[in-house]
Image (tube, rainbow, N blue to C red; front, top):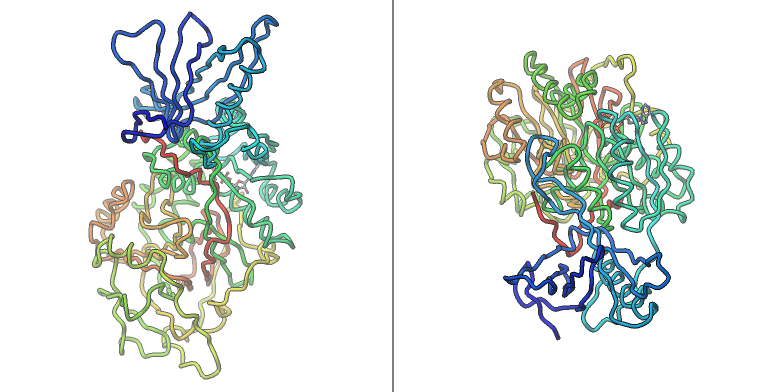
Length: 586
Ligand SMILES: Nc1ncnc2c1ncn2[C@@H]1O[C@H](COP(=O)(O)OP(=O)(O)OP(=O)(O)O)[C@@H](O)[C@H]1O
């Protein structure tokens, strides 16, 4: 067994070793060693004065192609390795490190005839592609192109008007060249109107595609997921891997994918390049979906969040600054802070914890488990800030689902909070505003919500209820609320949890600003703000008691009124690109 010195430790097993020329030639020769994690390139001719080695981490490689010279007398074969390392250059926000294409072509010329050289080149290309795709290869493996699956076929749906309207330009200049080097074949469709993506995925032949990728903001992926769930064969359809190449203004899922891969938080084109690189690595992971039900009976599937109050106000009101891209949220936040509203509402939830093992403790909020008088025999709720982030993460990650509440005629009476007469709501979407809730969602199929009872009925006895004045309520299931808002650092794609976060009235503007500033790094819970509460839950119900307001699901406005949701663990499949390879962070 050959051993090379690897970038991730010593003594890494060498899978392939060879000596090759280069293209363009210039008389140079190189010794190449391929390990599980990297391609090691050592120049032999001209002999360097010191031992110089270039290491190309395979995590930065998207593909490898074999080539033949146009000159009929050339008996050499060639293979090109396409990598996108981080290099010092001007990036979207000032000077920094950005990904840049770096292709190296090697000349295989050890044999007298082309076929033999071509076989060697094919072997190297196959080995590199297997490793990039996470297909296990060892020094015992008989490496051949037959190890590779057929090239992936992706349906790319591009919203030309997402974000600053750069999606098509970025797709042509960056995405398509990269995925072509990764041997991905694709159909690119530009969406022409709201709900176009939804209609398209409802009609596709699933067998023709290996994945559907939204080149857009989060809104288009929401349409894709709901289009799949509206199909008669939703159980099969929702297994279709979905991906996102961020080019909108709300790029929360892309932020989460980037973070999950261990990459530094970036925005704009840098985030797009990271996500395209990950897309080329193909790996897919289960993704939780939350089934949302609204008062009209509409049901939809959400993969990001439900927001009420400050967050949804900023999201929808900042639509008018869309041309600014992600900066629209910063401006929207400042505008909203100037006229901070509070909203009265009733928030009920089914805690994800085993109530006795991890009994939460509360400070200053009125928590009533249904079936008991408020403030009597109350299990106290504990905010994340009381508990410490790490403990909370360990306590809840991978926890078994809480016992399913079964409301029955003999159930205890509802808490006083939940029998208050429902308020009436006024909802008027502004001109040009879209409604994600509506007739479309009413047709959505999907698994039954066994944790929920109809919105007209009191929540089951095992649920907790908080009635208070809120600055915001956010049910979030991914780590990011925006590409640079690391809102729920403990969230995982398939943890089976809804992270219910709320900020109660009484918080000062300064404290709210501090929380949002700290959110960029995900350190907001460390501030131990007494107004900020986090509870991991399996299901929730939000009943606004303030007549006017904005509710959003995955950043899209929905009807205003009572809303509830339950998590369906790992229902969808997300292209995360994380296999054994670790991409170098910025
Ligand atoms: N051609 C189109 N014209 C107008 N709207 C479209 C078009 N294609 C898609 N849409 C709608 O635009 C919405 C927002 O798209 P997307 O998420 O890609 O952009 P965004 O800038 O991140 O917006 P947001 O932050 O509001 O989600 C989608 O929900 C979709 O319904």
